[in-house]
Image (cartoon, rainbow, N blue to C red; front, side, top):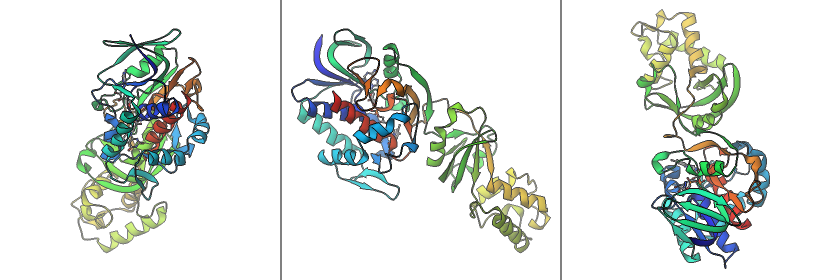
Length: 407
Ligand SMILES: Cc1cc2nc3c(=O)[nH]c(=O)nc-3n(C[C@H](O)[C@H](O)[C@H](O)COP(=O)(O)OP(=O)(O)OC[C@H]3O[C@@H](n4cnc5c(N)ncnc54)[C@H](O)[C@@H]3O)c2cc1C
């Protein structure tokens, strides 16, 4: 059996930074990371489309998050604010920049830079990084006994930073969450989040695959309004996608009858102005074919999809054959285009996982388990999900720093 003072299971964003802070805080103690994959930080390299959106200057706004840890966030961010996070990365030598939406990236625009500065620091501090080592069981006696597929370790203090099953192609699974459940922690149901939403009636989607359109997007449960977002909507073969859709996907797991409504009107909330413009155009271009009616507003294939969804059948007829109700229906579709969507079931396209260890079982000032002394939990294994824009890495890093400093 190999003895270490501190073991961190999972060498992702939260585990790596936790190990660095643990060694900074306890220079005389032995610290090891056990990582099941053949390298650490694999998911980190894929973040932000390879650019790594490290954190967000608005990240201390708890309304950007949902999950049972949400009520603990203020206490957590008091100990590790976004300013402190920036200073920590600066001390590690990382130069960053911030875009117009307060998203912070490495100046190199390259996730590899972030992983490199973290890896070099692990080496300098003499932290053992033990890869190809999947933890399969944990026992708490006087010390923790950590069993992997081939070896046994013991340690006085243990951190579980094993992430979530989101994006399994990057090696993710729920083995870490299972370990936490075996240790007696309550696990809130796991479901994919920050992902595209599959449309139930898929007849129109293939024709607009690849189209991107600015607009506002609202999520309803039947008639009940849940949340809205603005941004670029992306239409795929069978789904609605884009950051605004991703952010709504977080709310969907508890809904019975999820419906997405798109308002892609150039006049935003002003229905009257939209109707007025459509009526004028119907007069002005009355001899054109109906399939050209929306050409000045949308790219043609999106315009045709809107016309079809408004019940217009004879698209080659002249525009003057459109009735008053037809124009009102077209206006309604542009202003309030409804799509019944499915609850996501696969983690394949999910950036994160909603669910995880119940937030009430963790002390936010230390990230120590309230159930098991000397056990710390950080990162995505905790039941908390942030919006797109750096909020999830922000939580992974902040919670990792707090755990590391508390060890
Ligand atoms: C494609 C993609 C893009 C993203 N982009 C962004 C972004 O730009 N900004 C942002 O804020 N968030 C982004 N996210 C989310 C963000 O990457 C995660 O929230 C974050 O990585 C979570 O960190 P973590 O340390 O908890 O888990 P991870 O980074 O997933 O690390 C967990 C580690 O634990 C290891 N592990 C798991 N089980 C075991 C076990 N039993 N034994 C040993 N090791 C184990 C895993 O192999 C893994 O290396 C993105 C996610 C994806 C999938």
